Each structure stands twice: as C-alpha cells, then as structure tokens.
Length: 142
Image (tube, rainbow, N blue to C red; front, side, top):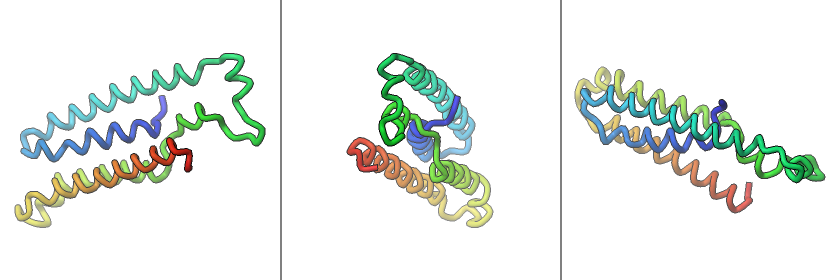
C-alpha cells in the first residue's frame, strides 16, 4: 500500500473535525476515531486503486504511453504524495502537539480557543489547496 494524494483529503477532512471535540476527556476518543477511520479509508482506497490500475487489457497495454512518453490519465491519478503534501501532514502533527502541550505552558490557560482556531484555519488552508489541485486536474490545467 502507498499513501496516495487522494488520502490527504480524507485525513485533512477528518482532522478538521477535531475542534468540535474540545474537552480533554474526549481526546482519546477523537484520536482513536481518526486513526481507525484513516486506516480503513487508506486500505479501501489502496484496494480500489490497485485493482483499477492492475487491469491489463490489450487496449490499456497499447495506450500506456502516448507518443511523447507521458503517462496516461489512469497512471497520473495515482500519484504519491509530493513534498508539499508531506509537509502539510507534518504541519498537522505540529499543530496538534502545540495545542496539546505547548499552548497551556505558553499562555497559562489564557486564550483557550486559540488551538481550536489554529486547527480550523490550518485545515481550511489544506482543504483549499486540495480543492484547487483537484479543480486544476479536472479542468486539465495542470
């Protein structure tokens, strides 16, 4: 299994729901749900895209590469995460670490909404990036 670009939208969308469960006693529940949901979707998407890319029909074999050696649409749609997407996921981890550990130390209980707002804004930027990337792909403007 590989981490696909399509998995990022699932992870980002689900993580963006974290601010809705803001009580400290709800933290283990939301982490368990995030991990389970992400694993299930990762496995299902990997199975789906693996089965669709492994079809070896004669027409697919013949049209695998066009005349100027570019990959066909089917192979482009299963790109791995790029450096930007991996940096975004690392940023999500940093936002979570800040919200759980450093915010209380830095602000001593003041501004309790700040980690929730930071999570929401960071996820909104990630979702905007994903939607723009998909829009460009659909409009064939890549």
